[in-house]
Amino acid sequence: MHKAAELSRAGHELIAYEAALLIEAGQADAFRPLVVVIADEAVQLERLVARDGMSIEQARARITAQLPVRQKAMSADHVIDTSGTLDDVRARTSQVVAAIGQLARSRSRL
Image (cartoon, rainbow, N blue to C red):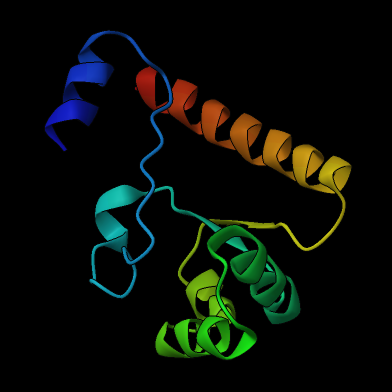
């Protein structure tokens, strides 16, 4: 949080903080607006196997040990689903960044 305050003082309008277990840790409200990035389980499995060299069973166990992505999405102010095409993800990301930027600008006018 210290780094976020420092960046804010330096004039950065938007600051992103990546924390995979933020919701499970009960810290979601400290990071509003909250963006949750999700993918279908089949896509998650494929990516874990490709990226980390896990077996399907290991990947499935990791996914099962975590809070389901759809449940995480319910805590979000914005959701980006990365199951689709790269163009779809880029378009949705642009929408979310624009919405958050607009919110930040409106708050700074208060």
